[in-house]
Every structure is written in structure tokens, then in C-alpha cells.
Length: 112
Length: 114
Image 1 (tube, rainbow over the protein chains, first blue to last red):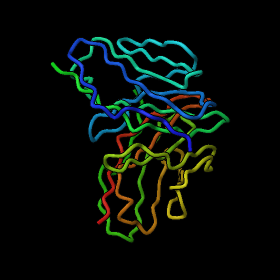
Image 2 (cartoon, chains in turn cyan, orange; image 1 turned 30 degrees about the horizontal axis):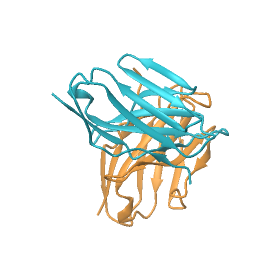
Image 3 (tube, helix red, strand yellow; image 1 turned 90 degrees about the vertical axis):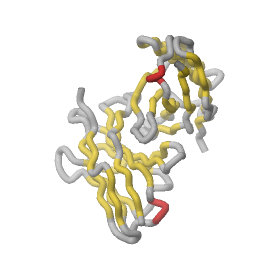
Image 4 (cartoon, chains in turn purple, blue; image 1 turned 60 degrees about the horizontal axis):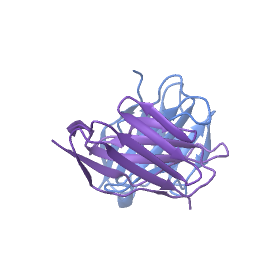
């Protein structure tokens, strides 16, 4: 069973701070890694994706991937109350499979 | 920005009835998916569809479920003889050509089985 693990939170950070969200995965052959944001009652919204080891930055968001440690993280700089949501880590396996396995998500609360 | 559209937004059905959930994927996308999310739980993969056939399915996707692309734009999920435990949000997603392309989700259909 290929698993994606996240701390369910809630993770509370003050407005303007850096939020750090973490995810580990069990399938060493995984190739693609995605972060989705999900507001309550809404659908997952793609935030970032990363394929290679290292960092990838997009605006206030930075995704970090370490395949050796089977670890992927999302940093949100200058956190805003509108960033309050559940952040879903999603992993796609190797071998041409299209299935994406989701973690349970980390609930982020940004306190004004 | 192109988006995945799903109808209806909410479907209420009696147990044992059949339901069809509809999706219009992003127009130039080639891979289509259905996921479900039971309230308070994680998003779960059901099925992927490519080149007019199922390319992958989960153990959840049993004989009760079927998918179809009846024309060039729609992608449907049919659930026969619905059960109470089928109550969930059902999300359609699509992605473009390529092994690592991200999947873009529709707003979902909330299915309530009574």
C-alpha cells in the first residue's frame, strides 16, 4: 500500500510568518509531487508541482523535494489569513501510472 | 483560464437508484479522472481514462461503477444501484499529455444517498 503521510494539524502561524508544511511518502519510485489547497467544501486547487530534487519557487510558495529521504515540503512566505485552508500533498508513482495518491492534508490557520 | 466543469453540483438520490455524474474536462487535455472524497476523509482515486478506455482503476471502482466518454467533450461516471456509503464529493480531473502533468480538478458533485 503506497502511503502519503501528513500531519493533520492544525498548524497555526501568525500573519506574515512562514508556514512550513511537510509530507512523506512510501513509494521510493514516485516521480511527481503536487501540493493542492482545499478550502472547506471546495475542490483541490493546484498550488505547486515538483519533479526534481531541490527547491522550486513560485511567488510566496516554495516546494522542496528530497527523494533520498522521501520527503516533500511546502513553504508559504508572508502568510495571509486567506491562506487558511487544508493543504494536500499528492504523489504520482512511476511506471506510467496516472493515479495520484493524496495525503489526508494539513489544516493551516493564519492568525491575523 | 480553462477549467473542468461538473454537473450537477449536488445530487440527491434514493438508495438503489442509478446516478450519472457529468464532467467536461479542459478541452486540450487527454487524461481524465474521477476521485471521491467522503466527508472528513482524504481524496481517493477511482479511475483514470485515456484514449477511450480505462487506463487504471482502484479497488473502490468495482462493477457498480462505469465511465464513459459519450462524445468529444463529456466524461461521465455512472453508479448503478447506489448505496448509502456512496455518499461523498465526486471530483473529475483532467491533465494534458505527458507522464508528469498535474491534474486539474472540477468543483465536484456532492452526492447524497438517502
